[in-house]
Image 1 (tube, helix red, strand yellow):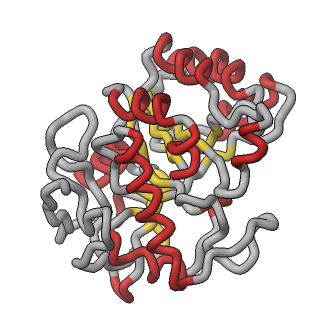
Image 2 (cartoon, rainbow, N blue to C red):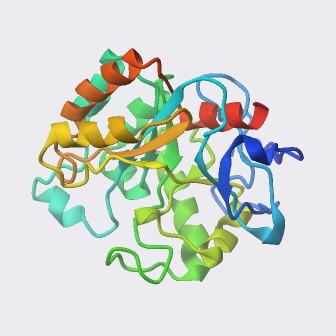
Length: 284
């Protein structure tokens, strides 16, 4: 098991980033995953990736964007969604991966953060490992099951509060089994749905929950130009953009990227991973 390093910053200039319900992460670890990020968890540097400082009430901290960071940075994030119940659909030929999207990011030299479900990593272990080993990218946690962490979330089945942390930890275990050695200690709630109960349940795992401030609209979209326009209209310095890395559910995302990336670069934006956005916000 990876040696643990407790990383809990005592000082965080709250004015440097947008957070909601900042909370306090506990000290203990569930089986299979450290309570604090491992010493080698950053990509590509050897230092541990930054997390938000603990807050009151024992709640997991939440990062939405780095709106007060210095410079025109933007973090593109991709949800690699697959539920615990979609194995039969994958066996029948439905594709929940998108190698062309990953190839385009590499060709354009765009750093990105992949929020991966554990079930996705189990279905596509070679791809999960390949993404996790590329210094352009980082792998973060999107739960194991992609079930909801609240009572009502777009019709998703709900995870009982007593099992929320175990579901998150199971995803980290799936990453390691696939060969993803250094996932970052960030968690994205399925559907983006969370409440105080969910933040309290995950707090002992030592993660920072990551939301977004720009919705790409790529889920089930058929018009790549419309997706590109929505992103380009929404991005501001420090933005976090939510997109998807699933061919069946987001078939136009790769084409949209071919417009989004050069246009944002023309505007002077620099692409970063979420870890860099959080780290810049903390030190700004």
